[in-house]
Image 1: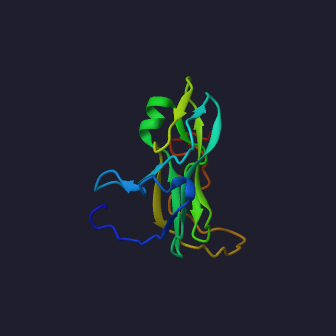
Image 2: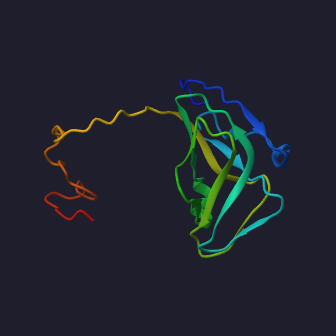
Length: 163
């Protein structure tokens, strides 16, 4: 656990196809994410450009006011071009189904996902619920350089290209 980080208890159930796998764990004391393992029955091939839902064999009961984020593993991304397609994927506190990981192969070669392989990270985080308040105009942001500038607007001075 990261030094100084609060602990949050998350009840977890191993589903039948994941009972023999260890629970997700932090790789190091300073890790932010728990490693999620593939609870596949047999090897799963992932061709270039292909995406698949990889089961973890786990269901969670997240505390109210939290979410779990599914994030890519940097090693899979760097070595094979495999990432989490909807990163970060969100698991809501009221979801009780199996945690699945949508992997996509953006690399040039086929990749094999094996049972028990670390395929993603799970980060549990607090969530604030926003109360939207309709207004005719928004207050200034305090950053005149930004204002309504969009994508890429802070990259270069006087750049008015929003894309």
